[in-house]
Image (cartoon, rainbow, N blue to C red):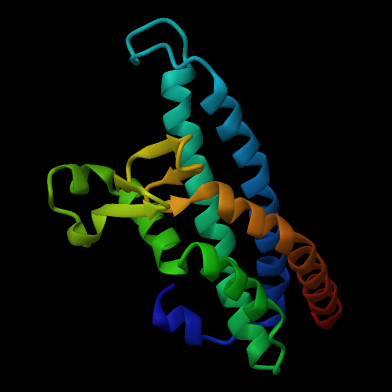
Length: 194
């Protein structure tokens, strides 16, 4: 989120819209995760030139999941700024829980690097040094980039880039009731304040 957006105080109409969109994006994460894991479980047909669309749909569903994650977190960060103006830390606890398993900057970078994938492919990305990572999980060292997905059965991890997506989704699912309740409260309070 750009500094000028973070610092700009929102009107009740803007809070009304953002609270609804934030809840929609959090819900979309789980809808998209279901679609992603369904495609992940399909036979990918080997290459995009083979019969079947699972190979190509995997790339699309992966990007849609990354986009949903990014919007869910970024919107929650902005709502958190707005709540903290009123000494309400409800969303800070949610963001802290997410941060423990997936640094918020990694989620942003994952989205940016996939959105600008061609730049990174030709070594011209803005954060090229962060594009390639090594993830250590137990006795395993997994070399990855933001464009790759790893399912490593022995290490018991599913990575989107360097983000452990399975662990992140579990934490977000635990936090979802808090997000839904508070965004609904903001929505209703903003509706009547307009």
